[in-house]
Length: 386
Image 1 (cartoon, rainbow, N blue to C red):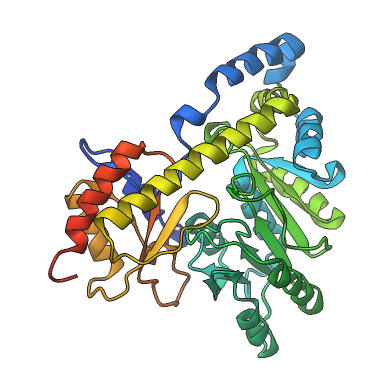
Image 2: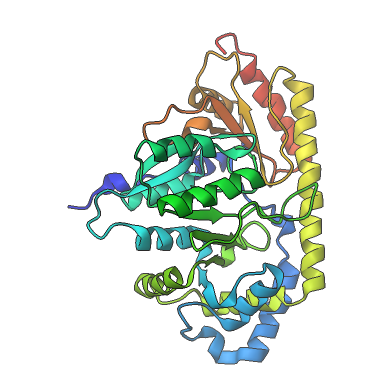
């Protein structure tokens, strides 16, 4: 009989289904805005791809990925083309890495994870039978000092998973000092740091930076889901040579290769560097404006809410300071008022105390809808039992 307890539905995806009810405004999902997906540009790229490749675009392809796409990523993302594997989104990239790092016996697998942390990563690691080692996150990212204490006390994780830029759900970014110390710990204790960085291009106040030095203990994951299109399912990983070879074999066993046509469409889109640069700047400008609008609505309608506006990404994290209700109760009441939000317990690692907070996303709703949603949310915050 299958061990179905390993496979737990994402609370956020469940909420998104509820958010489709008529009249509900969703501040729940970290979806790119429909109007920012460059449909016309992708259409041109599709035609270009067909003219250039014909039937080959619909054939089997190399498991490591189409060279045209890897070359494009080497230019715009500075990946190492010799050690890069194209995957069906960064979600699959993490699953492949977790599979090659797990102990052959399936016993004793341990993953250090951010707490609160990205739901999709927690799902994958649970499905792979990893025990989760929760590490707190603060305004400077994962608490590396806390991890160091656990390592000194005997914890031996296979891997440590982090969102270094504008972390989901808190929006915090890992500092360079902590990033360097995290790599030092990985090299000393022999675990792998898996850096999943889908929001790297979406910083509002400074050029893209990466807080960790290169290391043979570092695996970088990337994705086109937040910047180009989630429907294309294009992600990648860059890893040390020995790990890359194992990931390619795992990829062959999983699905042979990522969609050839989707890879070639993406490559045709990305090779115009001037367009890509302008497109990303447009994303940053729009999402910055939406963040500012959500902050303004909260300050206007829920002035007692306490939060720190982050400098990039898709999310605001609001601790429930002084509230008697838990986050799940608040989310249920909010949905009854016509607004979908995500309770903090959705981001909780195993056996860790659920965060008493809610996550709001400003990425996809219009500014007008966000203001209506916050007005509805204000009625929930003002309930006597809260």
